[in-house]
Image (cartoon, rainbow over all chains, first blue to last red):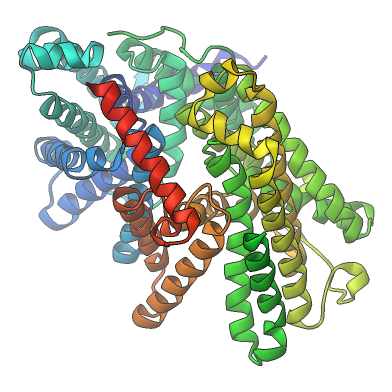
Amino acid sequence: MPDMTILWPAILNGVTTGALYALIALGLTLIYGVLHIINFAHGALLMVGLYAVYFLWRFLGLDPYVSLLIVPPLMFALGYGLQRGLITRAGHGRDENILLVTLGLSIILENLALMAFSSDTQTVDTAYGFSTLDVLGAFVPVPKVVAFGGAVATALALWAFMARTDLGRAIRAVAKEKKGAQLVGIDVNHVYAMSFGIGIGVLGIAACLLMPSYYVNPSVGHGFVLIAFTIVVLGGMGSFVGALIGGVIIGVVEALGGLFLGASLGQIGIFAIFILILLFRPQGLLGRLQ
Amino acid sequence: MKRLAVLVAIFAGLGLLPLLVGSDFWLNAIMLALFSALIGQAWNIAGGYAGQFSFGHALFFGIGAYAVAVLQVDLGINPWLGMLVGGALGAGAGAALGWLTFRYGLRGSYFALVTLAFAEVFRILANSTPFTGAGEGILIKLNPHPAMLQFKALSGYYWLLLALTFACFLSVWWLERSRLGAQMLAVRDNEDAAAAVGVDAFAVKLKAMALSGLFMGLAGVFYTQRYLYLDPGLAFGPTQSVEALLVAIVGGIGTLFGPLLGAFALHLLGEAAQTALGDVPGANMVIYGTVLVVMVLFLPRGLASLGKAGLGKAGGRRQGLRRRKRRAKDA
């Protein structure tokens, strides 16, 4: 057992990364909880958000955190449009078709990015990029602390939105009983598109928080897609709290796995959890919150 | 019987091609399409006939590919024997994966995700263990002799691939007429109803996965022998998984000739795009992705459903029935 001076920073690193994972998973779980579809293009759409943040910084000099005002609304609009224009039309009453369409979408987005921006990895330079904060003896990069705070704040805001606003109530109503919601006058198609839009908008927030401590290239979403699925499955499909807890667990498992097994094999912990949960407890740790 | 005659005629015609086509460039292009047809048909057995959509068929492909490579390089075992082992391991992996997932009632999207995760686990494992050559990959010594499953002329590989593909299509032809095939369709269309009339859905799905894994594993063996090099990304990466399902969906899932149609249509499109656009990285995949989306949107039963052959009509009727059923359910 290595002593705490090594373990503590790894755990802290895992928790902050995990909060970002949770944020990405939050959008996925919202979309699943309401529409009962698995959005395979989630990683590719995160990549789109990251590029948006990067280009705003490069050409307009906007700080990634300032982009929080621009990128999430744009991503929301993109999500809304995709759901209304493409995804509903492709279902033909089968879940597999939606899975296939979102898979196709992710292939298109990734390779369009490859054609337009090449496979080079891009980063943003910020004044605070390399400054660190002392947390009980471990040094954590400032962007990661901000990302952690932002992720928690977003999750709380989303929870308040679902609990307190009319639209939030409508979303929950549709998630629970589609026909009943329709009967009391809720526009189900609008609610579907709003849910998808909000899920993708949250990805926009994640992109802004992620970019200062991360990078972007056309296949950056790959790494996140399976991790986000793992978190959603671990926490319980459709569960917000589950996604947050699942995100932190996965972040810590990844950090500790990397510490003990090396970066390449360390990832196996994540997939092992994914497979075990799918096999033995497919409803997830917390079941479903609806 | 008519369909068998058509099948034999097509493959006989394809078998004569190396004697007629002088250029290796075109022969190679046809080989790439044939290879897609093989993995597409392998996917089609599980995805099209038994209704189990896998996103990780590269798992079986990679297992077959690594089996023949590791046996040859590390243990000096003849690749012809390695081919048998690779196919058997592919089938075994298919059955094992099916046993694990179906036992817990994983269906639909869950099944797709778990297959994807398994392929990813194997990619990481292959990347980290010494006997697979880890990240550097594994290189097979050049020794062009039929006894070593290597050929001097491209036509040797062509006929090998053609034989494997023919075996795969013949199996599907047999499947369509067999009891097992009928049971697979029943499970695909309504698993609970099939179980209610006495079909052992679990066993049927397991057999479908094993047969699918067998041909995917053989495709992996061919790939290793053809290129004499393998690394974890080539073996277990998403490329083969996506190509296999794409070919089947474009051609028409659950049809005998669909994967062949889809493979040649896609490669023709790919070639045309390359001629028009030049060698832009990613352009091919953008087209493939677009084709996938457009097919699911407008022609979910694939190119085969366009045909006026008996098959196309049956597909259309089945779809009409399903649409009516859905309408009845919604009302």
